[in-house]
Length: 319
Image 1: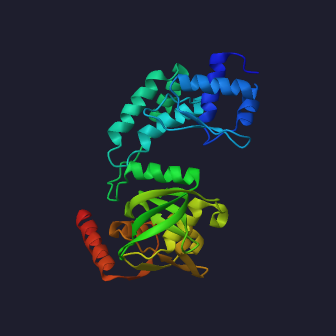
Image 2: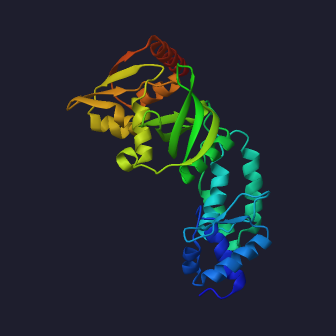
Image 3: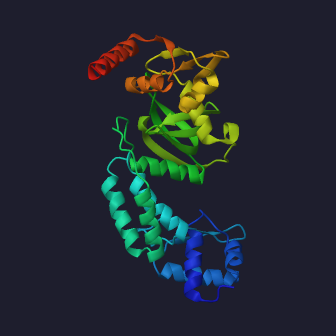
């Protein structure tokens, strides 16, 4: 039983921060106290400025609401370590987040216990981030946060979406998962009007609005959101077509270019086709080079021209 009042209050606050809503009975069982004690502790949190909403009745509960200022967070050791590392590495493709992330990191590191500060320092010293030239679109963190919240709370949203070559159109979806891949963010959602799964690039979403309508989540196709998105990306239409017939077994090509696994088709034991089509010409060149085998290529003129330019540049550099 948690008899120490400060410790119990911190534990209660930590629980409220981990889930959207708790019933009084659930909190009482977790803290091994009575529901009456829980009600008194909730009142104490409110007196301290924490905006705790309560719903009366047998099916009621408590939730930590948004207020005029964010209250202190309670993090366990693993959460604090993960947050500190993530702040250094995860803001690379979010518009205007670099300075904000560093300010938050400074605040967090200032209050970390010595043992955790040493762990974070060791992780940062032992890891590095490759700073590729970011040609991809940068995402508004407010959009990312709003969609993540809608996924967590199972709330239907509407937005305007611009397809690759089509006009902007309104969408009404049940958001399920956010997936990051290749410098881009994708939303896996159920299109309410079409009653079918769809994938949306976040950089093409505008005018996001929450309907405040809750939905019951459905199982994701294949039970793996990332795999489903990766498969759809691999088979989606691309700006530049490039299909290679490669003189190597499909299994060998798959090991060399795992990102294109869904685009490989065996012809016989020693030959396969690999669809290297994409929106970025240098990326197609990199995919072809990774095959490390002889191949013939059926491709758009833009691809062939870019390959010739790259080959001539390489020859000049080696002579």
